[in-house]
Picture (tube, rainbow, N blue to C red):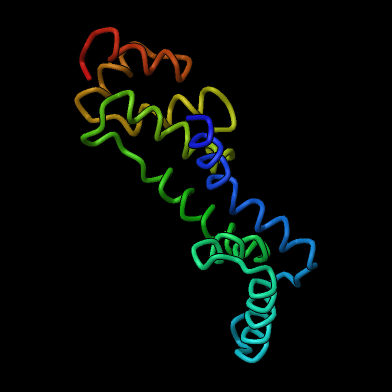
Length: 156
């Protein structure tokens, strides 16, 4: 049992160990535009050489490569999550599911929910229409209040 636990832990941490070893080789980060395929290819070849030297398993190469991109990848992901947050609606989700999704995505858009009033308004505006009017009638002052109203009344 203990050996199985150690094996699971080793497998879970493997990508981090590979990334750490890769960083010791001081690879160049990818910050070029895709306009120059030669530079792109040379960069990829250098990373592949490091992976070959380290005997990096194929299933960990992509995870490690992501570490060597500059903000380009994270910026587009953040933008996508911001758009997802701006368009977030409860739909078929339960209140609890909607709240979890709201909390997760709101961290990508701090400027939209810069204070409790803005956070509460955004949360309420994404509720199903049948719940919006009910919640707005009580004029909740916090996100927690807006969440508790339908949950406590078993309306969700």
